Length: 119
Image 1 (cartoon, one colour):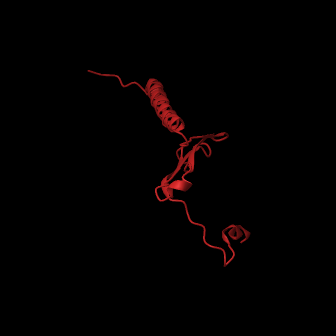
Image 2: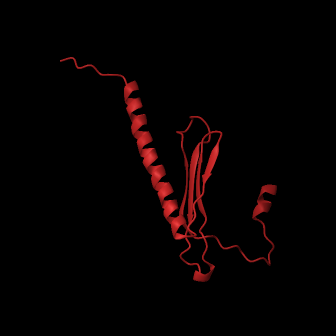
Image 3: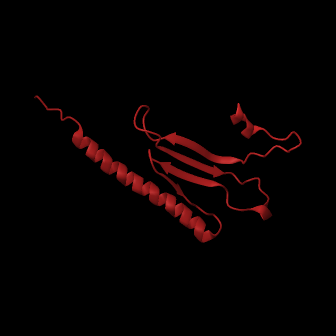
């Protein structure tokens, strides 16, 4: 029952407000029964309701893990240059993944059994 203590709060303490969420996804990268805990985790906080004078970067998470290693990519919206770079970073990752998939699919096709035409 001690694990429940992390959720306990003093009765007079105000409840913490949950951050508004724009994107919150967790996906395992392996099919069930294969390998370990490879995953991708993405989170983008929604700052629509924040006051202008308290505006700061939303909480942004892009985490990719294989069975052993985890990488956390950082993104910033602080300046126009950093905002542009953050979008560039994601676009570059998407392009690289599309190319990787095309190459992987070609290698998969080489390993598929050939069917012979018997006409």
